[in-house]
Length: 295
Image (cartoon, rainbow, N blue to C red):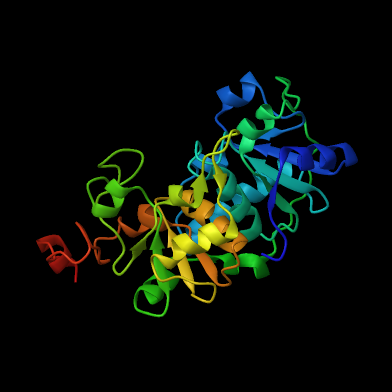
């Protein structure tokens, strides 16, 4: 990223005073109702929506969020500023909102670094009054779709040793004792995409007095170096449904890694096709009968 997509609470406050800002609160409705940034609209679907990358799934997702973001008052001239509770309390959902908007081609998107926790830690104003935005026509730009890879692209990436497939899920999902954050058996299979390397998404963040924040460029590059990724390495990220991987995508792009894409369907999609190969257990262990049968 030539320009950071992360902004501080003070920067957001200044931008809001100048006008043309649509803050988007991705938290659950009860959190929003208890208090939020003035003028913010609540779009929890950014977090909860489960997408597939089939043509039908992509069309449904595009239609859904073009309507949703238009209803929130985004017509192209406004700057969307996405936030969650803190950078680690919403599984990366503010970054998922950023990737969705960029995928749809929206030109002006920022992320509140540290989320609502950082905002309140600095004593910024909050309200319980729900926003009433003026709906706009949201224009989708198909030329911007290069941020995501679909299922067929992911299959090609698995076959290409030059592309690093980076799994950002929690350790129990990585080794195959759980299928998702929704529960161990939410998906029909447990494991990981073959050949994937692993950096748990938490490693891109560190604690601050205002909650978790993304690490510095040098710290992020140091984490990436542990799995053989540098600024010129092509990377495809995945998690369960594209939220945690979106958090990592923002971190990597902020650190200057040039070719980073997101498999938005992630494990939720890959695991549901029994014909697709998976790995389980610890890397380097003897293949399980399930793996052998899938090969």
